[in-house]
Length: 288
Image 1: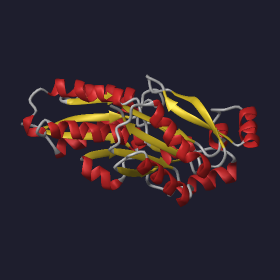
Image 2: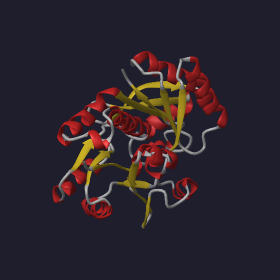
Image 3: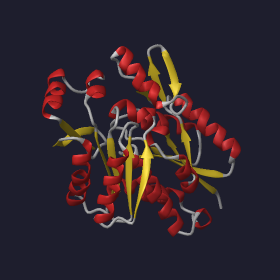
Image 4: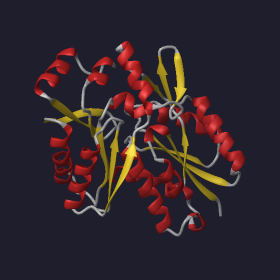
């Protein structure tokens, strides 16, 4: 019997309490502001907003490089010599993390890397489903075919959906992801795009909402539940700093109205905030 470890990057935004509950070990990604680079989680999110306000430039998130992964897995293997590691990587469509982790694990045995094709709360939902699957099989002590387990974990992506709605396109515009014209139009018309990953994990605008967050947040959840066959166990809610409590309360009220048993909250770290900006909201959902 071998010990089974779960790992991921900080772009998955697994909260501290869930890291322990899910048994997942997190490798920090990086954020650059000007000429200084920081590990995700090492600075307050307010510093990202302050930097943008001062410079008009967005902080830049960056993936872990191959050596970061080699160092990370080497340390884990020293601490857990008789282990099998399953690494749940941030979507390859939005980050090179998966690509770099694939290269790094060639240096090791019994390490599997999985492209979740998801981000943020979608990754949390993915890892939670993987843990539930492992538990349903009797835990690590019951597993003998680690390749088969990898393929079962890899298939989970078909049952996970995630999305987010930025409150403003400021960060996306400053980062070159939308045009000035689109930014101006969104401000004038109070339009907020619905951003979702495609089957390869690339992000695209799948719709739009008009109005303030309190007005649209409930409709956003209902729309996702109408579009997808969603399990009503846990709704994973992610948000960047700046979201008003009344918005979160309305999201939870809507979730309960739709039959969800519980809500899990994820305050986004620096990596996801670099993309979503101030006061964005998002969802991670498990599908039937």
